[in-house]
Image 1 (cartoon, rainbow, N blue to C red):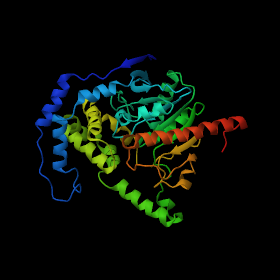
Image 2: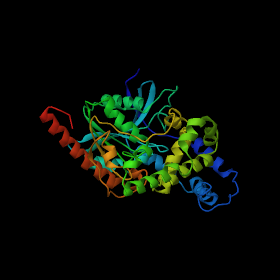
Image 3: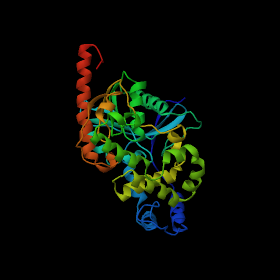
Image 4: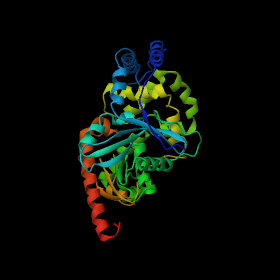
Length: 374
């Protein structure tokens, strides 16, 4: 296995863009079904306007240049070519962070986020999860978030980082804690954007009225719209024929999920993520986290190193404490969308700085005490 780290640059052929625009122009649009707003899925008028802008107003070359402004690389780990951004901070003593993006997102999630992090004293490593964007897809079944965590740990070792932190939300809220589990000697802290301490029916008898109200809202969010976990467990191959052949089918799928997830971002950034999915043909290959599972479960975190979150509620702190060493649990941070790196990148970066200051102090304190116990 090669351990070389090779420079990478996005350079999409003009023919691929022409093909995208041609397919958009020839879309066979359906009738609008009865029902108000988004009650039957993505409204035709909304998607048609978005697709027309994608074809005639959105400038991929400008966004390609913006993405290429980040140093990008590939390296082979565990038999896969892994794509990653690697932006170093000029702040002395900067702490390396490995960021894990969510689903159905990509490294594009961090476009507006890398700068605020490097300015606050972090070196940023942002890999594309296998099967997403420019990282190779797993060729066999059997991949797991733990296996991805092992790839991330090897990547950080290959980059020469002796200690680092992990950050992630959505899929990243599963992967990031596992990095600490597989590499506990080098990870100083785990920061998740939300999702810890989510209750189950078994917790209901001991919940307060406020907690029950939050639980009901959480259930409405998690059960509303399309159950992508069930769909992608059952038949991802069936649906990716449409996603990989029709850009509007793929666009509708992403629009549906971003709407359900309450994602607040610009139209252009959303379309950049959609364009990466289209050009790399990864709508199907990115579904492995779902089809490799038997049922859905909220992330539980880890109890190896300290944990911080960006937004605690509707998660419940005392439930998160059962499986995590929580030292940072704010309840008033701005932004309530599913991908805060796209919505409030500056606020998220500032809160990450606050957490890792605590995590580094915690590590120093317990190193002096000769223990990592609670």
